[in-house]
Image 1 (cartoon, rainbow, N blue to C red):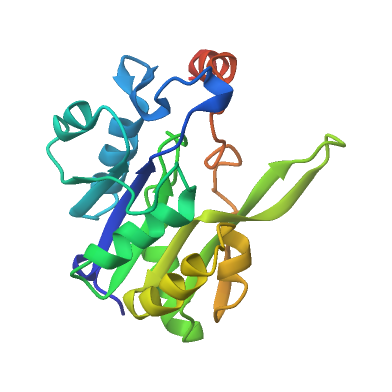
Image 2: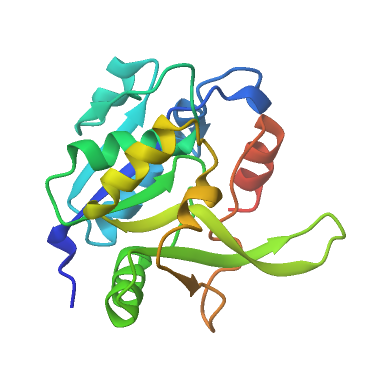
Length: 209
């Protein structure tokens, strides 16, 4: 079994926050604490001790959380894959787990379930698959490409992909040996992977707590 001490958690907070009017999403208050700090605490509660944050602005604010903060190595807010690349380049453990900064209800058992699936399937990436409401208002189980457990050996592949201009997370992960890990089991919170994209959604989520 993969030991949780062999996993580095990376909180992805490097986006532009376009749908929040340019606000730094990870620093927006949710129940009195910044979103990214909620993520950090839930990862810690889930047994992940080695945690970093990927951010491109307000670095001092993120550093105040007490964990290392690394900006993208790629220019111009290149998206989640830039964060993946930063994490893999610096990771000193065999595995890197990526999570976005805008899902404050992520499951506490996220790391062990991804680790078990990765090991049992001998895959290179274990990716979350979770309930999501589509445009037709129907709930479907969809892959969540920014929730991944990756082997650090994937660094070379990602360097080549981004060097060739690739920026889409799912386009790169589709090239790897990947296992989807369903989080729609009995007892799973169907809202666990709900991501906050706007201030209105943030306030709505607060009201449901």
